[in-house]
Image (cartoon, rainbow, N blue to C red; front, side, top):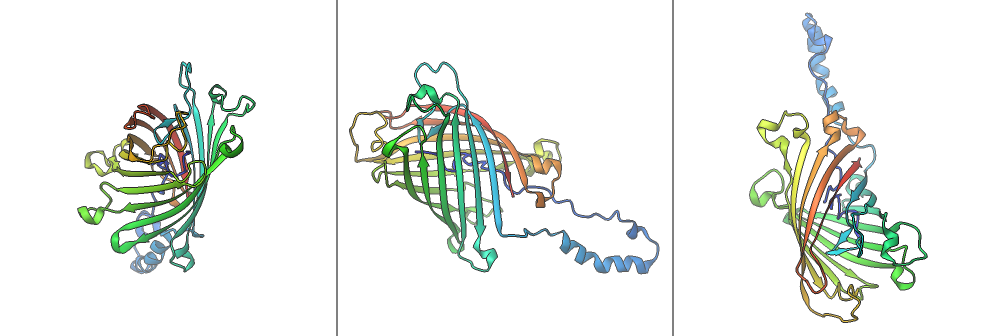
Length: 336
């Protein structure tokens, strides 16, 4: 019942997701005093070493490791259509603070083309935690901690990336069996650029299937989502415009499907269990990301920094269990 590192950002991190390596590399230009020399022999000598210099400018990571960290502040913590940070009489929006860290290793860079392996940790801290009354004796505002492990592999023949993973959700305010649960999942991401004949993806569809093996009693949650990045730098009239050229707008749409998942957690406290499979909610989102590293001209060897904001609306389809929710926030991320 928690968020993984890849759902927010991305999700946002949708998101943002989170910050990607978008720093602009500043290669050497032709302003070298050597090129202004009148002696032809000097110019020829410079031309002879130019390819070697260009090769040096092609920076490569010294180790096959990717790292990212992101911080998000959000008005409500809504997860799979359920608002976990709002209570009767709240009166105003109390902020949720979320921090995620992840690392990933590409085995291909180690001479073993068997995909990538990653791990992540995500924290949810809520300033109004004491108002939820989960555990009056728990005076810490830490609401949730998620631990994730995953393996991904690209099936180039069908333009699809397969990801298998495991997530442990820990709830510090709870005790006993409710203190933690875990979920195994498979995610399929399709690169539709070849289908549309474009350089990048158009709808970027994905399908997610997760099964909870503990508190959810083998209940399953499924998602089908699409999104598209609109980089303002791709618009000729804005390509050189300060600030705008480093902005990316990403609308998204996700269908959440409940297969005996919400009922297993008994979110209404009725004790009833529904064995059906049905659409639970429709999630509409808009992310705005600003490539700060690109604006500052940071070399890609220093990593990438992005800041941004987002707004989401969850339309309840299972009105017997869920309500419509709207929330938003701001984020900052760094990746290398």
